[in-house]
Amino acid sequence: MKITGDDLIKMFYTSVTDDKMVKIIDTLGLEQPILDEEYDFYKSVSTNDTNGVGIDFTFSELEECPEVGIPCMDVISWDSDRKIKPPFGLSISLPYKEVCKILGREADYVSTLIDELRTWIVDYNNNKYLVNIDFKTIDLIDITGIVISPFTISQLDDTYVKNKD
Image (cartoon, rainbow, N blue to C red):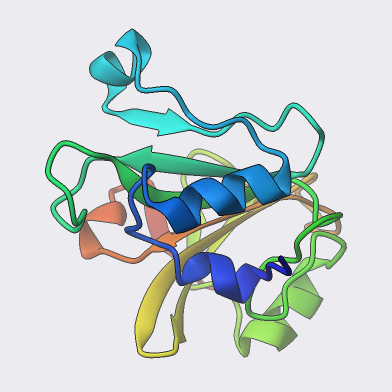
C-alpha cells in the first residue's frame, strides 16, 4: 500500500477504529492508539512511533467525528520524512525561504511563545489546513517538525500573531 502525505490529509476526521485508518497505522509500522485512562483524562490519544517512521497521528473526540464517543484523526505530525513526505510539496529538509516559495507566501502567523515557529493557513482541494512548522533555530534554516490539522478559527488563540515579515 503506497501512502502519501496527500492521502493522509484526506483521512482527517476518520475514526481511530475505521478499517482504513487501522490499515494505514499498521502499514506505517506505528503502534495503534489505546483508549485507556490517559485518553479518558485528556480526550486525545496518539499513535506511538516506536520504529522511527517520523510521523504520528493524534485522535480526539470532535463534533466532526462520524461516530459519537470515538476519537477521529485531527493532527498529523512529521519529525522526519523518511517514510512519507508531508503534503503540499513540503519536506523536513527545507529552510524557511524555500517553504515560502512552495506555499506561495511568507508565514501567516508567528508565535508569541516559540520564536522558531511559523504558521500558514493553506487552502488545498477546497479545504483549509493549519500548517505549523517548527525550525531548529531562530535563523529558520532547518525544520524540526511539521504539524498539520484541519483549520478552524478557534485554533488561532492569542499565541498566534500576524506575521509582519
